[in-house]
Length: 409
Image (cartoon, rainbow, N blue to C red):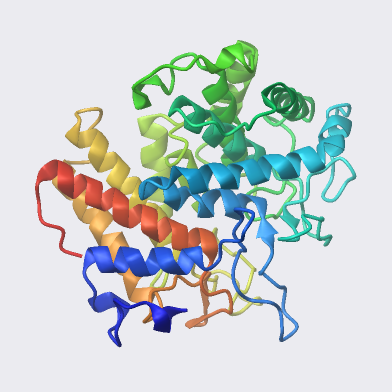
C-alpha cells in the first residue's frame, strides 16, 4: 500500500522528485498486477453495489502492462501479452465461429470475445454492454508484432499453433468487415463505426503486413509477413475507410478522446490528420480535472438531463496528451516533422499536461478513473491510467535526455 512506500515518508506525491514519483506510481501499478501477468482494472470490488472493477478487461491489461516497456521490464510485458493470447486460445471457437459470418455480430453474440473475464479462472463475465470491440484485436496485433520486431518471443513455444490462431483472428476481422461494420469501440458504446477502431485494426494489420511503414522504429528488420501474410488489399481498404471517417470518430461523435490512439501508440494517421485530431481534443474536450471522452458523454455524467458540459472528466486524457506531445517533440528534434511546432514548444506542452495530471492525482500518487461533479469515483487507481502516467513521465524524461535540459517536474 502507499503507506509502505519508503520514498513518501509522509510527503505528498506532488512534492517528490521525478524519479521518486516514478517509483511510487509504478508501485501502485504493480499492486494491481496478478500472478498470471494480468492487471485488474482497479481495486474496487463493488462492495457498495456498484460495477466491480477488480477483474480483467483485455484492453486494460494490454495498456496497463505498456508501462513495463518504458522502464525496461519487457519480461513482464511479454507475460501479459501471452496471457491475452491464452484467453484468445481459450475462446478460439468464438473466433472461428465469427470468421464464418458475413455480418455485424451484435453486442454479446456467441461469436464475440468478451472484453471482461475473471482474473483467476478467465471465465467470461457476462453483462449487457457491448463486447464486440475491434480495437482489442488491433492493439494485440500491433503490439505483439512490435515486440517480436524488438526481439522478444511473445508467441510462446507452440509457435505453429499460435500462428494458426493469429491467422484466424485476421480472417475474423476481415469477415466481419472491420473497416465498414459497427462495433462498440474503446468505450464499449455503440454500435457505430469508430475511426479509433478502424485505425487500431489498420495499425495491427500494417505491422504484420510489414511493408516498411513502421520499419524506421527498429534496428533489425524481422519479416513478419513470412509468419502471418496480410494481403495488401486489406491495408488499402482500411486506409480508405479511415480517411473517409476522419476527422470524426463516428456518425454521432465529431471527436473523441480515443482518437489520440491513432497518434500514439499507432502513429497510423498523416501529420495533417494528427494535427486535426489533437486540435479537436484540446479545443473541445479538455476540462479542469481531465479530458471528457466525447461531447455529451452520459457515463457518470453530473447532470444527465443536461449532459453537455457535465461530462465526467478523465485524468487519463492529460497523460495521453502529454505522451503525444513528447512523441511529437522527439520527431521534431530528429527533424522527422515540425508541423506541430518547435521542439521547445512541444516539450512545454508535454510538461504542462503531465503537471496537470499530477494536480488531480491522489496525494499518494494514484490516478483516478474520472471526476464527476468535482469528485473522483471509486476506481482509484485505474490501471491503464496509472500506466499512462509512467509512460508520460518516462517519455518526457527521454526528451530531456536528448536535449540535455534539467527535468523540472
